[in-house]
Image (cartoon, rainbow, N blue to C red; front, side, top):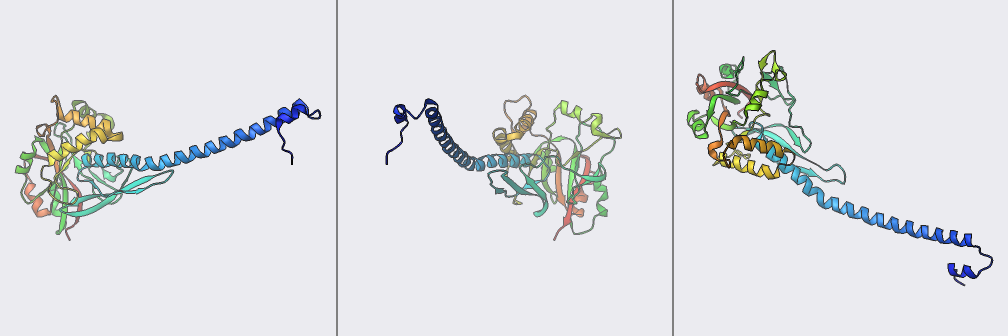
Length: 318
């Protein structure tokens, strides 16, 4: 069978120029379309492979940033092991969020990569708020601010049933060193977490703004709003050098902080003040979270260094 070639049509008197041009254009169009389709498929496959390779890395970066945030912000709040779900669209990761009360784990919810750092709480007043999980939210009072009303929950210990572990926030009358805090607390009260003085003059002025007050009174800071460091690890063990661990976490957060990097940088600059670097001497403690039963916590009553005391989570000891 004789093959049909476009060049033969130049010598075919029955084939005009228009037909030849149409034939060439049609075949050229099919060739270009075919090549474009194959290129598109190859590019799509490459993009899918690239996403498969990059997604775990990007998710891990977000997990590290979120983990560092909860290591620094949130009083006596820990995050557990992350569970990742990788998809072409909508990859996610979640981790349990919990508190420790003398080694007893109390689940307080879940954190995800998209979880807001703002906690929604409910209650009859700003001084008695609860999470949707039913846990009491601790209040903190900065020593440089004058509040019209202070929480005095140490005076309410008799209302708590026996056989309970009680989490309590203590706000001090001034800033102390970590060594001073350890020495002035009763030995049978567990020091769980330390609130650091991380507020600039401008931030303290903002806390006095009318928008942050209720009926003209200054509002206390909530447990998820304060920055500090634990003295107990995630597994319930005593941290040997808690301030060193805090500074190491903050240094790591400066490079791995992701969307929270500016917050970490500001915190770092406020803490170190005019010094070249952040050291143990720069870390001032203005409050703590302690855990004990009501008999143990009774020893804190009438201590002059305690300006306010606020209940947190209360659970059965056994």
